[in-house]
Amino acid sequence: MNESDGLRFRRLNRPQIITDESQEPQYKGSSTYSGKVFRVTLLTLASLVLFPLLGVILFLESPIQPDAFSLNEPPLMSDCFEPNFKLRQAERLFEGQVVGPESIANIGDVLYTGTADGKIVKIEGKHIHVLTTLGQPPCGSREDEPTCGRPLGIRVGPNGTLFVADAYLGLFEVDPVTGEANTLVSTGQVVGGRRLAFVNDLDVTQDGRKVYFTDSSSRWQRRDFLHLIMEATADGRVLEYDTVTREVSVLMDGLRFANGIQLCPDEESVLVAETTMARIRRVHVSGLNKGGMDTFVDNLPGFPDNIRRSSSGGYWVAMSAVRPNPGFSMLDFLSQKPWIKKLIFKLFSQEVMLKFVPRYSLVLELRENGSCKRSLHDPHGMVAAYVSEAHEHDGHLYLGSFRSPYLCKLDLSQV
Image (tube, rainbow, N blue to C red):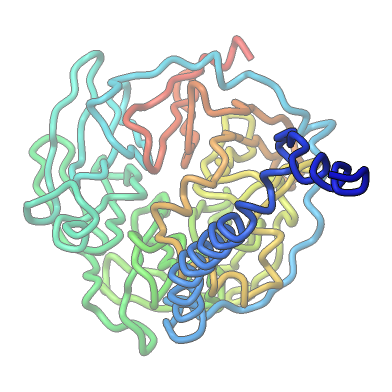
């Protein structure tokens, strides 16, 4: 073997050092194949999700046909609206025994309220009794509401009887002792060319002759109230019932969610919460201005529900939801984006949407001229949540709720 042959032999038989890098080419084809499988699987799963979603967006009809409308920038939560914890000083009453006590009335120290399961209950001290049920069982579910009934606004008339607005069944006069109920106005009745679909709140004149009440919508029922808010349907009405002639007439139309109603002291006008617009309107029901309407207070820091008199001569206004500033208000954001509202209701149910409503509780006391006197807050709804009404009696504020399973009682001398 010569020198050149020996060199060639050593090169051919040189030991090889095995490293991670030296193995990479051996598995490159396998790695590339695995990556392709992963990408194909990921794209397949994405298409399985996105194509049905796209189909829903394009072809499924939205249950609402929202209008675009304009809201002013919410007022700053400062000065009279400065956040506090005063509502947390309230105590809960009858927890788990009354669900959704929307509105409250009293005869002496006896309280009356309507509940989500269609009952009107009587509260005496620490005892609670069922006074009457306006509808027919079964009760307690969304599907049962139209036949079971849902008592909302409740007032005491001058002769000591209860006047009740039931969202599905109409107006009633109820004996507070026997529970006997007399139908005044049925929701099957056509008034002004439209049926009553969402009877909400009421008030009675001092002589008992007139009952003023709101019909929140002719299109949506109470169980679809979020549809009404999001659609911003301008079909809410203020109506008058004459207890002598038994005639019903329309006093005002075109309101976006006509809600709580309260007679002014002179009884020539009523205050009406226009919930979707975050304002309170004044509708003239008698006198020289009868048939007219103006704005009592605009751009509230929340969406108003029921309105009740305060002992100071002003009004208590409960906010069903707030418009935080600084902060984010979903309803304000969506007010001029109807296409987003449509999309949301294609994808989510009302029950899911309600989970995004903040539990922030707010009650305002307004002066007689509509200016803010004070505000009571529970920023996270830890004690009082979903407040629908503030009813003052004997130095205390009783707080109703459209969905909480309790009443609240606040000692006003402590706040």
